[in-house]
Picture 1 (cartoon, rainbow, N blue to C red):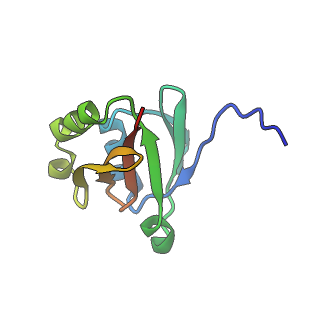
Picture 2 (picture 1 turned 45 degrees about the vertical axis):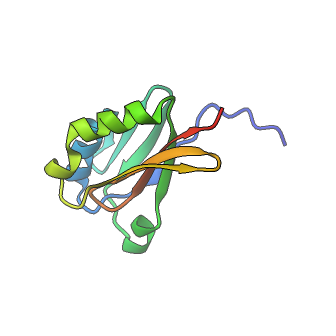
Length: 121
């Protein structure tokens, strides 16, 4: 089967929807409100749906990988945003080198783990 995909848009939940909306705007995503309980957040051609829905097991097991061009620059920009200082439960983990490339990590206010990575060239 040949996919002629144009995008992939995961759905993620939020323990506190308004706090998560603010967090993702601060992180640099552009928000499009779709309903009182759902927004679409995008950066460039990529995005995800944020829902006003919280299932602890689902949230605790949600991870998103965002490939970036320069993980060092991205890390420095994340640090400059001081998101852990602005949002409870937000945690940054420095760049780690692995066999495939490098990545840093960010937990959102609900606990979703974001991987920001750069593959070896």
